[in-house]
Image (tube, rainbow over all chains, first blue to last red; front, side):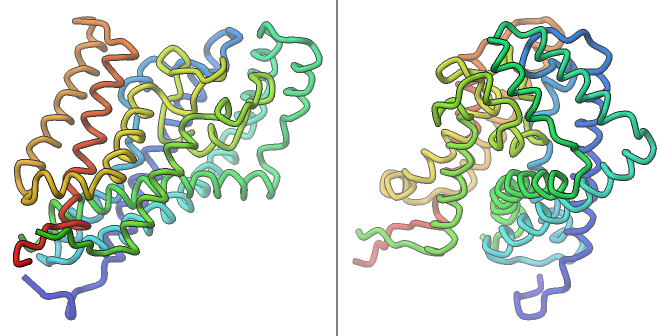
Length: 181
Length: 156
């Protein structure tokens, strides 16, 4: 096994893991969105996408684990867990960027999707048992999801979530696959 | 025997991240936000791509749904608890090696079995069963990392 001074680049593994993570989480999100649109607004805060309610959880956290596994498998190296955490963080960042790009491409493919989701959510809010004033306040809070500010904010929140969980899965990946023990 | 800390900066970073994730996962209800104001809260947005956020499978705080389901809140909560308790784990079990990986695999398999059994109608899982199984997963994640951050120095 190679030592840490002569280790090869990890970018191939990071980019591959980022891309796979972004495709999977965005696909789950889009399919969940279409399932939402196919259901009647029930007055519940979130739509219940039956299939994904059981298998979709934490799939986005596997990127850090996968990147470490792939890096070790391809290059036969060992390293400390700090590097595993770094790979996980990179995957979180890469997956965020790729998921924003895929979402924007999807907006071109189906321009009415975001608008239909907002419309569904407004109908859903109207079905809720809440004071009219509160309902109006919530509806007024719907901004244009395609504005630069909202895309940036969504990307930031996505990075916080994907970043932290992939750092943790990167630590585990390095411990399991790249440990010298 | 003296407890020795390693990778302190990394430990503190992961501890902070895990703590933040756990608090965020508790949802806007923790900050006293009312149901009508909670729509689109940053807590929900952070976990949008990480959890299904199904209301039927989530706990509430003051009537406001948490940002993640009952299994996920337990994973984040027990992982954070495990991170905080690492110095204690290291004292009680100084050589944490392969058996922790087996515990992790067992926890993953238990959760998978629970999900599959529920999906095919063999049994119905509950908030509590999901919480307990998620907790087993979260705590083993922390256990597996313990010796990377804390070990007992036997020479002293």
